[in-house]
Length: 164
Image 1: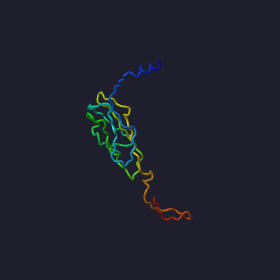
Image 2: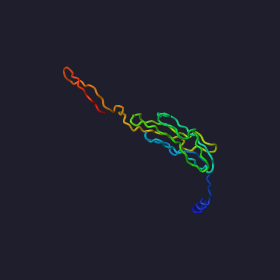
Image 3: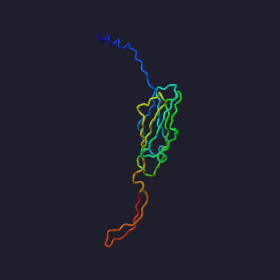
Image 4: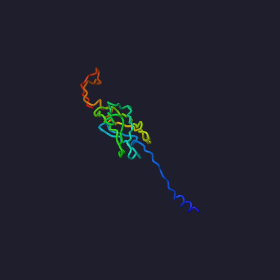
């Protein structure tokens, strides 16, 4: 009896219909301030042969557009996928403040909308973290000159040089 049920269930043909959707490659990117240009891939799945568009937005966080990063592509905020293309990228330029402590900064990239009939996948928002490579005390770096009062009676000022 069990074998008959098992065999009858195995002969069923199941068809799946996959919807076309757009998604980001990953939801978190961490880059060093000296990375220069870097890309966030946007993927199209199951849209074979279709020309589709995906609107992309970049939202400032502690990192500011024009100061900490620049949007290179897409300049108009629209990625256009033609026919067989299933992957394009948001290209960003990370501006380096090497030698200056600015702290870790962040911003986000999102898929805002897509061509009608193209759904948005699970990963529609990615956070980007820019790691500062400088030490928080780097603004103090250098040579400092002054006087130190030597503990005597009366106090004696002595010249001093501090190298940091």
